[in-house]
Length: 143
Image 1 (tube, helix red, strand yellow):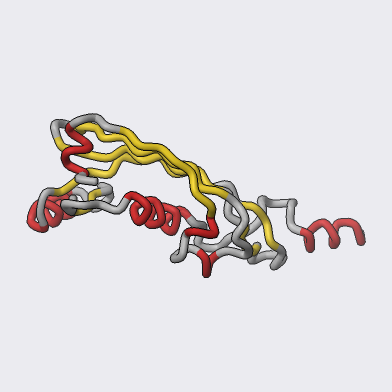
Image 2 (cartoon, helix red, strand yellow; image 1 turned 90 degrees about the vertical axis):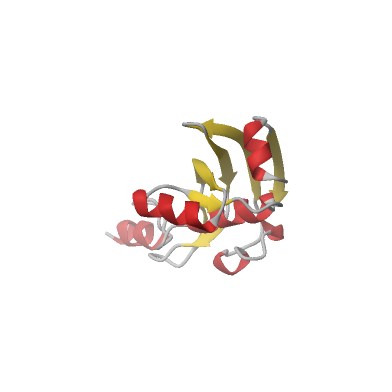
């Protein structure tokens, strides 16, 4: 898709795919079960073309506390500004390093964009919520 045109036309796409289909994420997962649902909308932010992306996934990760697999609910919702060229991209990143901005390639692969956001949304140290680890429950039961 042409992302600038997509944004200007306020177009939208939505879909779902299996986590087993996400090649770059596979090494981080404890299993390939689970699904990714997503919605992409073209928007203008202050007159600038942008993409609003919503992604939900339920990957199985390995808890670094107890080393047991667990399902980790991932939710990403954000707006990504579209830079028309490298100079604009660099200027926006220098003006605000926290801004989400990507270079608008003439043909953008939506699946790659979604995979990127999934990878960025993974916890640095995956672990169960406090009190949900198997080792913690075993230790509490021994007391």
